[in-house]
Length: 312
Image (cartoon, rainbow, N blue to C red):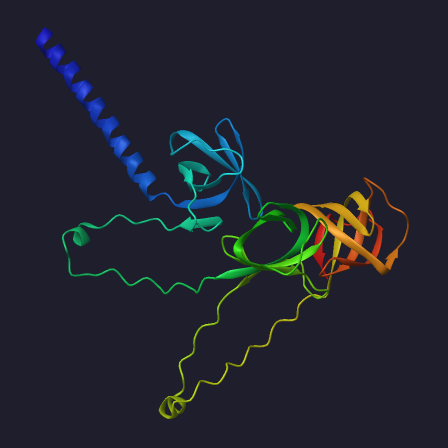
């Protein structure tokens, strides 16, 4: 009788072990197929298990778990590269390399191979579609907040942007706080050229996508002629003005600084601006401005005016 009881206990233990092992295998398989993304950004703070970095559109909070591989101790100002799940739980955090482009990139999940593919079956996977041409540079037009050694820190629409000047950067003049600059930069924010923005330069970040090369026509190829320039498609009509509704933080000479939905916005009053009354800190204002944030009219916002930036 005791022998049967011992055998029964042994079988129960074996069954439990098999169930646990199966759950672990399923968990590993699920984790391997989970979509991930790579975040490359400047580190602002480490708060216990959270790495807070400066993203293109504001702060991003990355959570380190006991399973996270952290290659070294990192601190404020370090440029890091984090492989994370879509809920921002980190799989790996390391120092970013010089060729790592700042930003958030989604990584396509790799599907598990079928037995036929593993055994060298005849069926071949379809070729992936051609990738769209990626931008090689971008143009940043914004107000300068600070120059810290080789870094030009500007106020973007969604927060601060850090532009790095290298020994190859062409800088047309010396700039200081409040100047509106125009910077041609690579995708990792290393500047090719920094100059003063013109009155027609619209504030914001514009990606510059290289035009695809066109093959010469049959007659041109036969004669050895250069292909004719492509006719550009008609551009959609751009908005000429926008309305900004927000709380007033400060009035600095001709600039009205308001709290927007995603950060501070600087509105410039000119000699032609209609200002209905004198405003101060905390007032909720409504400003009709051109696309370069030069104000046409500044007035007190009404109860039905919705906070934010509205294109006219």
